[in-house]
Length: 107
Image (tube, rainbow, N blue to C red):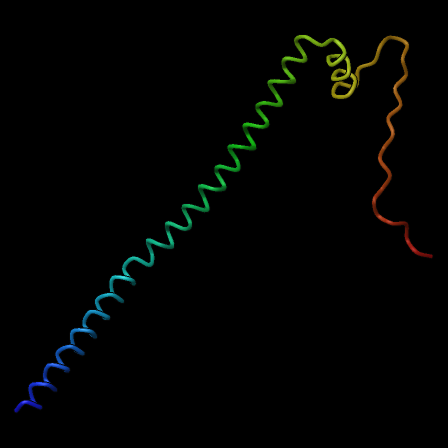
């Protein structure tokens, strides 16, 4: 009878361990989609943070350019020449196209 009790006790322990493992796996499977969603949201958040930083840098550049347009006549002239293709009276503007980057055909 003593052996019977020992075997039964071991079987109960093994059964409890298996039950706990099944429950743990079930809980893990329930939370797996949430973990994936959390990772996707973190990546999306990082992309948004990079976009915010890019937009902040663009805003800073544009504010600097606006201030220069208000206060720096030389900057106004350069901007008018480069962006609006304006020239002073009597000036001739020559625009050169950049060289093509593709190599010439072989002969």
